[in-house]
Image 1 (cartoon, one colour):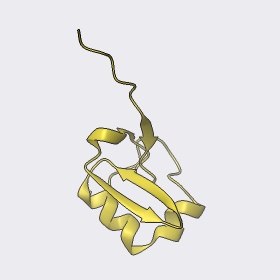
Image 2: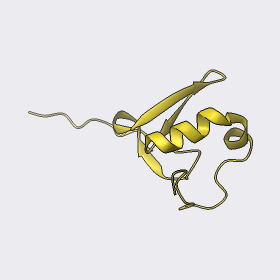
Image 3: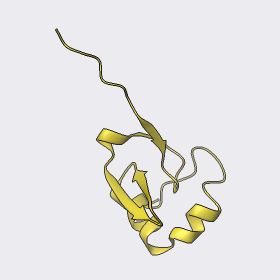
Image 4: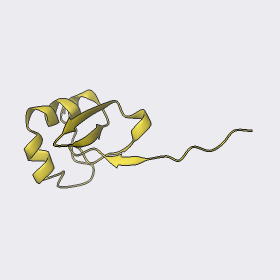
Amino acid sequence: MKLKQKMTLERDFVCGMVVEVRRAAAQAHYRGRVYYFCGPSCALAFGKEPEKYVLEPFCLAGQAHADR
């Protein structure tokens, strides 16, 4: 019998997309916290300016991805 695993969701601080933690395309550690990302371009954008995204996370859900 298979047991259902609890799905843990986090928000991508760059684009605002909801990401399933165990399937996140990328992650970064910053100031004692782990941030999860939908793709490498969002992780790269976060890595360049983490304060920008931590202090002022995505303004609107569905904001364009960092690579667009």
